[in-house]
Image (tube, rainbow, N blue to C red; front, side, top):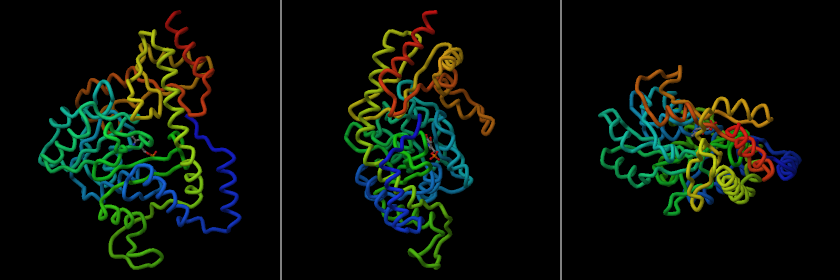
Length: 357
Ligand SMILES: Cc1ncc(COP(=O)(O)O)c(C=O)c1O
């Protein structure tokens, strides 16, 4: 993945600098928030400095506290559990579905204890759980749990009923880090329809100020603000999002088609009507050797997230077969929106060549 900035972003930054703005978040940031709210259909959008802090702030604003258990998938970017670990909540790891790599609801059910406060569902690569988001909503209401969506990988991905991912739980979170479908370098956003939660997040990110531009504080807050420079870039990137969403789908189709006869490799099925694959993620036999082989041909790939419970940072006992399997066989292939068809063919020819040797 490569971020993709061009003349439009350069020109917009130039124009902004020529205006003599203050750089700290203001009108351009508000415009970026409106664009995301409009695109996702959320009532509120609040942008912050990255997609890890957005998870932390939505969890804090939802009332999750130190000691509370939060159920998270064992296959995700480490930011998901770390975001609640940061303030002393306890991430509880459960396995994911084989077909989607989203949380397995049966595993989630088994992990509920009297200390469970929330489920943080991760929409892996824009996919939604096979069991359905409605099943998670039902489970949460049955046990009085908060449903939060880590939709960092989901801009451009919807549920089958047309709702944008991130807008079904109490709140959802997006990331605009360098590899995402649009990027502001770093950046994150919280979307919610809940007025109180939105208000709390706005205060948490701005020192707990009672109002903009004053120094009256009625709550504890910090500084997780965005900048106008990022927003200027983000506004240009948002204009390019519809095209990129379509291109990501084409890239996926081309990989799927080119690799359809390679039994050693499997792509995850993707609902291309509703969702947008951010990355091309595959399970590959002899993954490590394949990766080395591709590297020698100048093709960059990345090993998918290892099972988090086995990472040194957590070391929690338990075997989660699907996340273990991804740890052994999961590989991300080149996936940038700017990838040309010939480049995709070069990658898939190399993969075919590797297994035919
Ligand atoms: C599922 C998931 N959650 C959270 C994050 C963290 O976002 P950021 O890198 O913006 O902090 C990422 C980033 O890749 C992610 O993929």
